[in-house]
Amino acid sequence: MPRTTSTTRATAALPAAASLSPIHVLTLPQVGFLRQAQVLQFVPISKSTLWRRVQTRTFPEPVKLSPRVTAWRVEDIRQWIAAQGPQA
Image 1 (cartoon, one colour):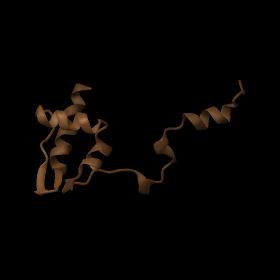
Image 2 (tube, helix red, strand yellow; image 1 turned 135 degrees about the horizontal axis):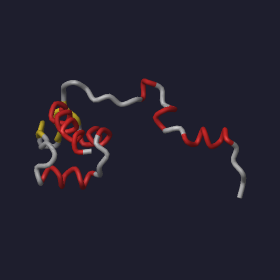
Image 3 (cartoon, one colour; image 1 turned 30 degrees about the vertical axis):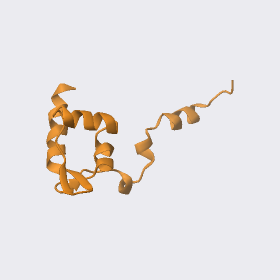
Image 4 (tube, one colour; image 1 turned 180 degrees about the vertical axis):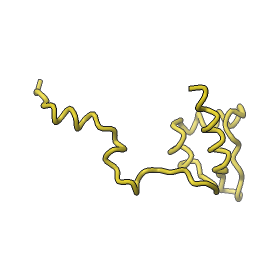
């Protein structure tokens, strides 16, 4: 088994976000709509879990913007995230 140096261990222990420039850090907009892929970047659950929670009304319902476009209101997502904090 190869031996690692303290430099290698320190680098490996850095979180992935630490290597990103500030431009790549995700921020939730103040207003607007988010598509499913965008919601899943802020809420670390699977697509199946997302839709299961929508069905059981434990996650905000999306809005149909057109027959083929479904999105969530940013305000609803922000509210949901804030409500999850005290439970953790």
